[in-house]
Image (cartoon, rainbow, N blue to C red):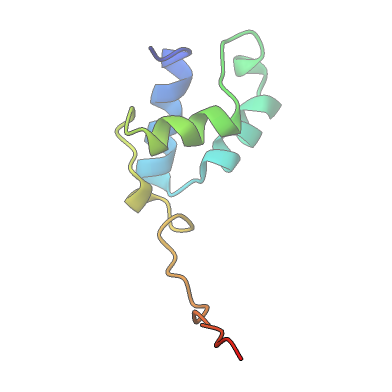
Length: 79
């Protein structure tokens, strides 16, 4: 069950249509007087909702979540 539906809708709109990160949405709404008395979720909860596919936002919509691993795997040989 999702809480803070109005906030979730706002966050999804900003992420999908304006390229904001979940952190940017949280930071923006915390500074706005309009959101002061409304329900919001934490950054961690927002990322959890995205990871669990509970929102219209997917991991692919977040540039930092889809960044490829550039480190080479190193296999150690036993002597």
